Length: 252
Image 1 (cartoon, rainbow, N blue to C red):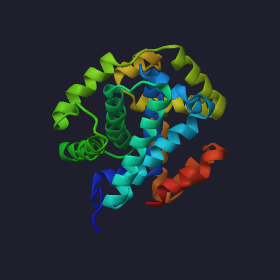
Image 2: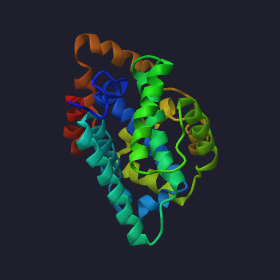
Image 3: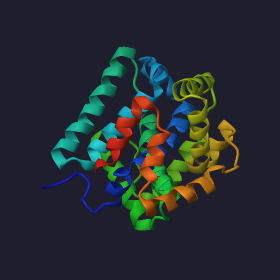
């Protein structure tokens, strides 16, 4: 059977671990809030009403692509394209191509950053494989201006971070929604994970700081894997409404 992502790919390893996906989720939640096109996410009202659910749906689509056979993955990508086209028709405007690229770039970057925080440094070949997979998604969505290789992506990623981010009223409101839906303790945990994974430009705009409170906690968490209790620890701090969804992310 032909898969969209090869069974031995590092992309499957990353997106088959709930821990890594939660860190990707944390990084993306920071950058989504700063993106100059965040008003598109507010247009339907779904993001401010349920920011966690909206981000989990994005994760669900990405995972479906990563673990599906080839034709099913293409159908999932086409469905994403159709959803966005429907929003564009409702608003009577087009989502800019740079905004589409930003989302793909986030998936590449936070896949790399999250795995390296939780596991180990990736090789250049593995990073190139992550880029290749999500670039194929962009090709299928007919997104223009995609980089041709991983080195070009790194250059464009820096350009996008410097040009397409802005702290706005949407940023402030979205973080209020994060706090409302997570509660004060989990909200602080989210901020600390963001400190670990977001690029310097994102950290600076959000004033997250550089004090890495979670470094010793992560060391203990990694040690807990030897005793098989890491999932018990992780699941104990998850929001009740999303606990089942997160646990299911380990099924791959």
